[in-house]
Image 1 (cartoon, one colour):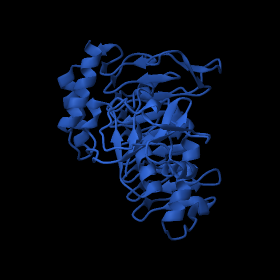
Image 2 (cartoon, helix red, strand yellow):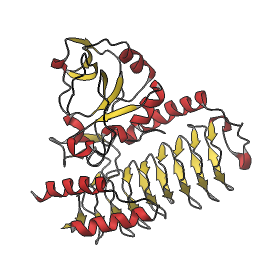
Image 3 (tube, helix red, strand yellow):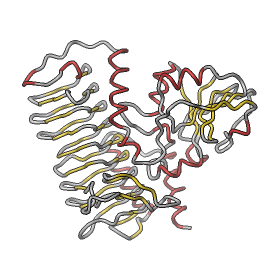
Image 4 (spheres, one colour):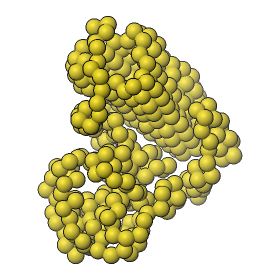
Length: 387
């Protein structure tokens, strides 16, 4: 049966990262949610999301299907229970479908996978890891780095790491073939360190685990990394980073601090850009934009930035700042704590044609093209804010 990760209407709570992606594309730990389910099940995984995004993903084959709530992090205990479900059975927690098996070859649309559609509803008693809010991405990152590193060690062979330059806990370091490291220091005593193929670690970098770095990414000279941090594929990174996730294809190439933050794809943080991650009164950080009610995040939260957004040199972001999709951020003083999609400066609106031109230029720098599907998604988002 075909395995499908499905989005629910609650996906809007993951703004801005689900504006341009299905939930399954979110990266935490080493892998995206989709990649992790594929590795655990050994089969191709399909995606069911909102209609304006669905054309971004391969068509779902006809026939019987196993649906899995995309917000659920794949772990072996969850996979085992789901794979034991029979036709027309659903695993339900707090009234929400965690997984279900269709009994027919009928098509299922976005928002249609609800408990009432299944004849048998089985209570889910497992403790689930789920990504329901954007800050869950960095809050779960430490656990998922440990989880994913264990999977890598069990399923891939590597040569033993010789510990040069006084590296600490080399048994917790996994370096794929093709990675290039020059006179850097790695301390994996607090968590594992994973470096994918074609990564480059330049001279003077200091890394504390847990840490993962995706294929083709680079740490520039003197970069300081604190766990738990994930750098996705094809990123250029420098300065100081702590407990952050950079999804992929983005740059933070110069000095500046990024902490307790999530940066989407195709973003660029200008030289000297920094964020605060703790309030001056050390109080609770709340989110009250883009959510139905004010939601407590925790004592630490930095910058949450959607795809295609950029900041000018020396931009300062306050604690708990949300930047939407395709925001070109510049201005005097601290940036506002909420920067909507297609913001120009701090408060103006980006001209759509200019935004598309600039995104295409940034993609060309990494030898990629802006596709017609990308443009249609961005146009849909732009029309929403113009209403």
